[in-house]
Amino acid sequence: MGIFKAMIAGQRNLAAIALELVEVNGRLNRLLKQGERTMKELDDLTREVEETGSAVASLITLTTGLGELIRDNVDNRAKLLDLAAKLETQQQLIAQAVLANQVPVTQPPPPSDPPVNNNEV
Image (cartoon, rainbow, N blue to C red):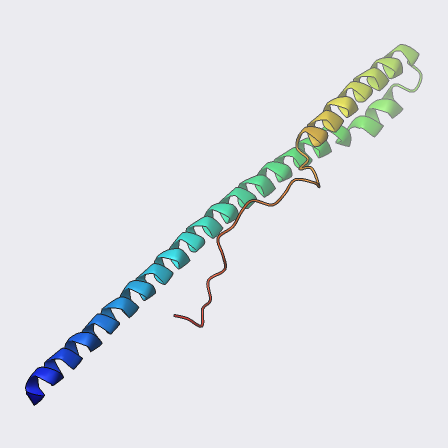
C-alpha cells in the first residue's frame, strides 16, 4: 500500500509542477508580447525622430540664405516684397504642418496590459 501512496503523491506533485509550468509559460508569453510592443514603439519613435530631423534640416536649408537674399536685394523693393510674400507663405505652410502633427494634450494614452510582476517568475 505504501508504494501506491507514493505513486499518487508523485502524480499530485507532477500535476502541481505542470500547473506551475503553464503559469510560467503564460508569464513568459506576456513578457515576449510586452517586449514586442516595446520594440515596435521604439521603432516608431526612431522613425519619428528621423522624420523630425529631416524636417529641421529642410527648415535650416530654407532659411539659411534668407538674410543674404535680403541684403542682396535691399535696393530692389519689388524683389524684397516678393521675398516677403514667399516667406509668409512658407511660414504658413510650416505652421500648418506643425499643427497637423501635434498630438492633443487631452488624448488619453493607449491602453496597456497590466504590468508583469517579475518577482512571480
